[in-house]
Amino acid sequence: MRRTPVSPAMRFLAYGLVGWTTDSVFVWAHTGRRRASSPLNVAVYGLALPLFEPVHDRIRNRPAALRAAVYGAGIMAVELASGRALRRGLGRAPWDYGDHRLTVDGLVRLDYLPLWAAYGLALERLHDALAGVDERGSRDTEPPPPPMTI
Image 1 (cartoon, rainbow, N blue to C red):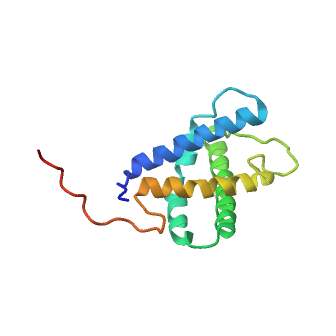
Image 2 (cartoon, helix red, strand yellow; image 1 turned 120 degrees about the vertical axis):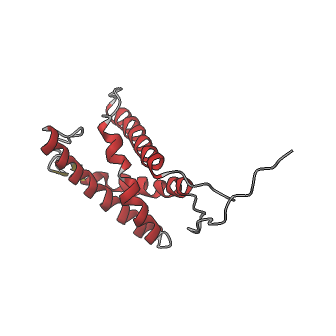
Image 3 (tube, rainbow, N blue to C red; image 1 turned 180 degrees about the horizontal axis):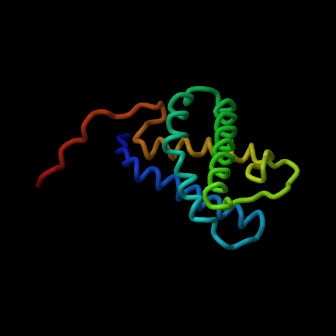
């Protein structure tokens, strides 16, 4: 089936909005807080475009457990780095895990690794759909057929 790739700007926005929405629902389900996640998280989740997509393209044919481990560790590294950058620039990060016993600098919860791994696996399908890639990782380079005239 032919899939038309979405522009990089729209892919960035799609990753950002999907991540922001997922985060907001998770926080609500986990804490009961009905307020949406910070809009700054849209940009953080949008980093999937330059960071996740190339990794997925390189490891797509590896076993799911390996891909999940790579995604989980990578997402946690981005969470830590972006949280530190936001603290430096704004004085605080939009998320803070406080002094939870499995936290790193209040910005990453190690017990969330399986959740991030599963999220990364879910992003594979979104990436393929947005980038116009089939399940084998092939991009359709053939130009689209001309429009039908009546």
